[in-house]
Image (cartoon, rainbow, N blue to C red; front, side, top):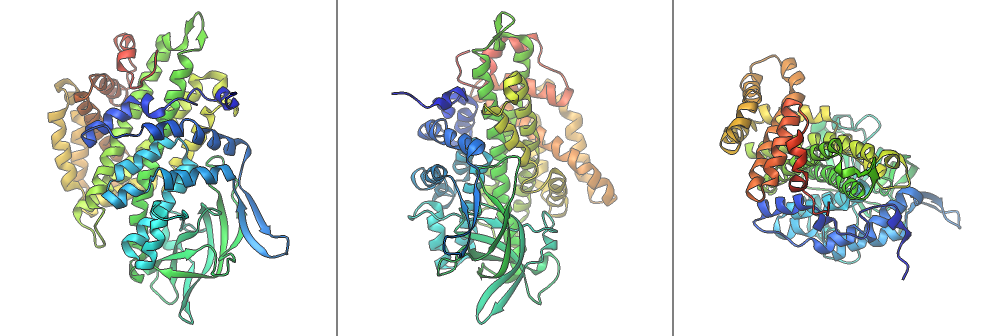
Length: 544
């Protein structure tokens, strides 16, 4: 039988991304104590899901429908039926949202997101998980029932959304103007939400609003659960428009007006700000794993291409400079994967906490901010380099690689820019006392690294320790201006140590750790010895 013509667009199509990704499999062995079974999902995301994702990106953009044939306002979105079916399969059949609730296992959940290879689909699953998490943890029994449909335990599948942002309130939640009024025993919302991702899919949305007559600033915010349709099936908001975006085409993003929209408070009305920030811990981890997943998928695509394509009498993968580039990208993406896993394991430590949070929670936040900021920046770099390594084909919309780069571009903007994360990192590290356990992590690095490598990073370790020791007493401006560089220094130290530890699984990771060290800490590219060991060092199961 004739196969799909999509095979002409992607080298990965029809293969199994999990079986090809040795780095992921070895990292999971290290952190889970054995290799879990993602083989079936690996086949699925490399075939059915991949084709639908790319088709929607190129030809199937969501379309707004404002009126029906009877002249009734419906404010709905026409979304690819194929994408709807695949999302139901992801949540109900594969159960990607179940592990955190059933077993407190966020790493398995995040691994599913990593393997999807599309920030848009990942966003749909993530905002659904965020909604379910908030109402399951802080809501009543009715909300918990709704959550079960978002976990995939109930049919039909319900989808969620997080509608926080406004025209003058993105990362600065204190600027939120949406009002919540209690009218005849019913809470109603009034305002405009500027970025409403998953509109059209969402059955319910988390909405941050300000109770009428309440406190100003962030302390006056409350969190609400808003159904997107009222009891009669009419829209519970007015659609202003859909956003025209550079990437993440698979997730519709709108702009809406709330004009008496019914909603229900979640938890304590006075703790909405804390609930919202806790909820962002999840989306930032999802962003982290999504970023690394885009990087790893791009490298995989290039490796398969370069193993077949010839230029100047040799395959691309046999050229030394090409090998050097691939080794750098592999080392950076593997280090980022380690950082992502370290961050999610620390989140698992504190997932049961409620405000006010402990110093261990602040420690988990330090990792959260580091991982999100660093992996996003690196994903933009890795996917951009992957486009170049594919030459002119890398720039054509015909092929998959350019989509990966467009998807990567949003990862440093979504869920807070790098500057925002640098400031939040500083607060969690110093003000909230996250530094206490961070210093323990730094002290352990010397015992992990090879003596020569540790001597090479000793100054960086000392710089981070000095910053921690002086930040509380130095001028605030000094701490702020140094916060971004310290964030990256600390993240790369932890990544290097984790990559070196992975050498217990396979010596290839010692090779990659050395490449990462030389490139990130010394600015030195792989040498002839590195490139001669290319096949033994690369962390992919590809016949080169």
